[in-house]
Length: 455
Image 1 (cartoon, rainbow, N blue to C red):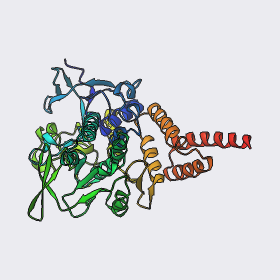
Image 2: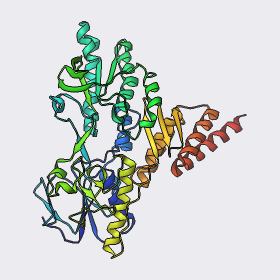
Image 3: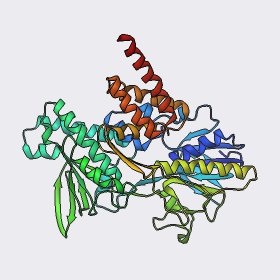
Image 4: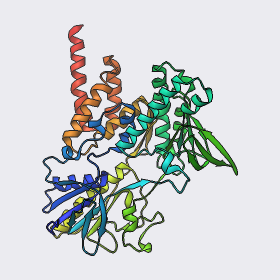
């Protein structure tokens, strides 16, 4: 079916795509907006670890697009994109439907990059979506159940060994999470939690090398050893093959083998296949093959097309592929789309890097705030989750998720009102998040008031 020409089509419902759509709705954009994504639910990827380990639930981390877009006027289409025709200004879907556009927003993000490592795309678990988290959860539980039942020591060792490939932020966060909750799971089944092994396999000499979280390395390395089981870090180890029951890697020109039933792949990303296929000349792509865009977020050859997030690169600029960059670019794209519709001048995108937040296990994190100071431990954990929750896509979902988190995280885990006060003051002062501040202040005042009445 062909839709009216005067409409904006957004391909991809990640941070850039969703925030573009929501900002357009908020700014009363004078054209219709269609958001296309193959999934039913938005995935708040920075909190996918909390969904995986049970700290947060489905509503908080993977809400439905229908809920997030309710009342916005944005039309959501759940379908996969088959092809994009820049010259005909048409997006064709796998279902057979197609949509013409006056403006297009490319927000497809990136995909897991296996870098031609033999067997990695078949035998390693990615960790990118809700489906990935569910599949890994089921697999790990099966491994623990089999381990508790087997008398074969070598077999049990394989079942209880997890190898995380990639020492960037995703690998560090995954390893830390596993090293905290897997021992508890296994102990609950009657097993010896000390048998759990979590191995972090890193290609370079240092973890987090070249990552935006690089300044947090000293704290991260220290905290990784404080988990329920210490994480074994193997550096200068290049994964060369992933088999069903082993990972093969090269270290100092020697091939070595790690026996395991679970390999988790966090070793980088690749450009989305649809972006790869677009008719954009190589000189208008960066060294990762991403299309270059102008400072106003438009393609060089097709100015009616905007692109942001992981699937594009701004000319003469270098930005990390993080959520905070993607959602700010979504707002910038929305502002320029509205300006274009109203015949106004477009403005260069502005992105402010507000610091970095790194999860280091259950109720533990490290935060680098505005590159001014660092906070580690449980206070950083509160800051990280509180900050992300205030960035959730809509005020209603933001309020609901934050309320649930505060009730569970602060007021159930910290029952001593004086301790609550200390944690809350730290979190609110450092985060400066309005929703967190208001909710915490109300609840804290009530708790302290009730305590005074009982004295």
